[in-house]
View 1 (cartoon, rainbow, N blue to C red):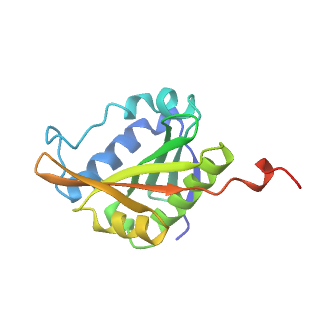
View 2: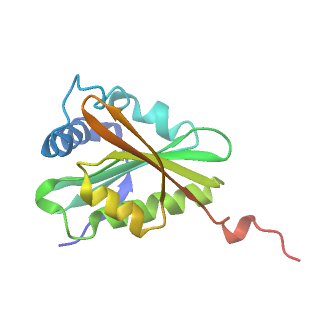
Amino acid sequence: MTLSLRRYRWSDREAVSELHRTCLAQVGITLGDGVYYEDDIPRINQIYLADRGEFLVGEVEGAGIVAMGGLRRIDDETAEMCRLRVRPDFQRRGFGTRVLDALEGAAVKLGYRMLRGDTTLRQGAALELYRKYGWREVRREERGGLVVVYGEKHLEPHPSTQLAH
């Protein structure tokens, strides 16, 4: 089973919205709990793609979009990795790793030096993935009865952006 990654297209909006809801429901995060939000989903082009960011979807032939993730600009040096999702029946196959790797690579190419992100204690697979790839926890906060874990990762500059000595 092969995952093909590509940039988000407007025609993906409904599939991305459904994947977002499905993955959050899997860990008990629901609309109105103070953690759940989806106001960015209808505006991916504006919020992510048009503002020095990225949004990727992962497809499996015959199954459609099963993974996704976004990179949103915070400031000139920092981006937020968000919406990292893998459909429950496709988890534990390395798809989250593929999306995370691609987004980190995109962040470096876009010139970011820091990535930030958050997840909840209920999203154990996401916490493990972030830790495995060098993210460090910076704080925790309780929201809507859930513990939100905030993390960050310093990025190495892309070789093409470094000056030769």
